[in-house]
Image (cartoon, rainbow, N blue to C red; front, top):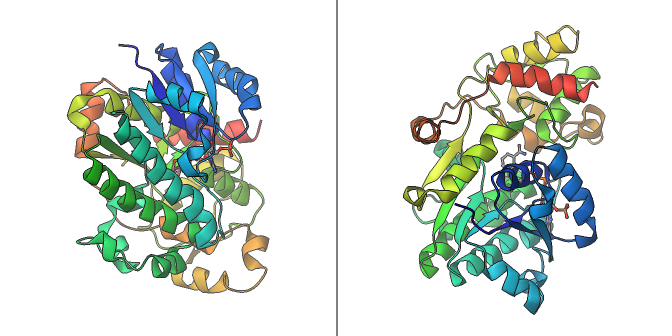
Length: 350
Ligand SMILES: NC(=O)c1ccc[n+]([C@@H]2O[C@H](COP(=O)([O-])OP(=O)(O)OC[C@H]3O[C@@H](n4cnc5c(N)ncnc54)[C@H](OP(=O)(O)O)[C@@H]3O)[C@@H](O)[C@H]2O)c1
């Protein structure tokens, strides 16, 4: 069935691949764009990723503006959407609470209100740390009564980007519960390049890690032999999102998009370094020491590493049985994650 869709964050990395897979399946998509004049370039990118750019139309708007900055005409277009995919977020390290909240929290709530008001199904991208409950408690999230969380304290602990992602998640759950809207949440691990082409954008966290390794800035392994940075390929993630968004049984569900075969950090750095024809780092550096070192002015810039990025490196393992069941139901093949890491390095080195 071809469903009209509305996508926020469609110009971003995951968004481009989502648009490609949606249009390849024949779904017409309206894309929220701060610069709608960029539509032809986006259509071209989507065609390059195997989609059909002619099925895209731009809707001028901004997550940070009241009513998303939509004109009356744009609102009519958006109302027709059966499914809303919300991916838009302000991703950068070192954001203030105000900067991050304006787009990532307030924008998410606005999208949720719109979807609920017009009876559209909402699929929102959160993040895999939301499934790490011990971590959430450690950083101050009240899981029993999230509305009692001291959010400014959480932002101080985890930084603006992650603080706003955590807050947005709980605010959207609360909003959809109050309005009776249909919501499915997908929690992606750190996103790896496309399993076939290796396509990734340089600002993606994994691309930054590879760049640090290539330039010799990563001379020690953060954490211990048990630490890992779970990954998911962008193509598998997007296929899972579409399957979940169109399946009525997934309303109210939260899905973890994470490949449990991702090697631990020493193994991951070994695979990446080998493809870069470099020696991998062998020494370990405790996360606490690294976090402390990164407080030294100038060091985060010198090492191209933000202390905020360290929170994603943990030892926690996750239960992915529901994800596996969904993948099986739609015959989605899990790409080989080690090969995908290698293909990503090759793409970046091209
Ligand atoms: N990549 C990962 O490893 C990862 C992991 C877990 C979760 N996620 C989540 O997945 C989602 C997509 O991530 P991504 O890596 O694809 O991000 P990205 O490449 O940084 O793209 C961000 C998108 O948000 C849009 N955006 C930013 N501010 C906006 C505003 N004020 N109004 C409207 N749109 C705005 C950007 O549009 P412009 O083109 O106008 O800037 C862009 O389309 C995010 O919610 C992110 O938190 C990502």
